[in-house]
Amino acid sequence: MQVTENQFYMLKDIHVLAKVGSKGGCLPLKDALIYDPKELRGLQDHDYVEAVALMMPCGGEVRGFKLTRKGEWTLRKLEAKYRLDSLDAAIQLYAERHCLTPDQVDILRDVYHYCRLRKSGGIFPRKEAEAACRADDLEFLYLHGYILKISSGDSSGRKEKGYILSNKGEDVVRDVEIPAKQGADAS
Image (cartoon, rainbow, N blue to C red):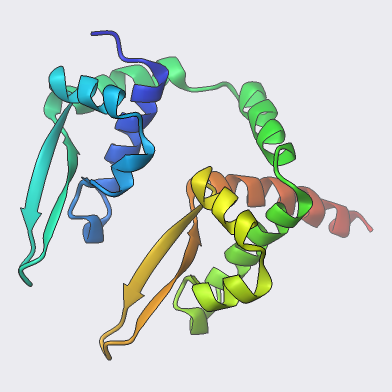
């Protein structure tokens, strides 16, 4: 089977999420809903990805998808093929940034800076986001993969829901922040 570019990025996302302990080392089923089911099924049928159900010590269960050895090998083999050279990456990032409205870029910057505050616990709380941002902008950024919804809890039992930046969102913020910082240093 020839792996398509979309399937390659699916394999890459599953590989990245395998390193996240809270996800049980797999892409959770609810997070897999953003992908085309036919392409995901194709990866399963050709033994690149396997469906797993992980039981947690607390009795919880995480259902999702995990890379097989064949999937890991294919991912490493194809990374060089789909890697964009620096010029293509800059052009793609420029185009992505300009499909966003200035308000949406500002929201990404707010999420980035708010997540760095110690008092926020590394997330942009949902209450703050709903008060400061338009709901349709937040939904657009979430649906297009710039931000991720997160629910976290601490040892005291306090639960917090909010947003964090995805790698795609961080790239946009970095692309916006670095030229702004260079302009400030020049003056």
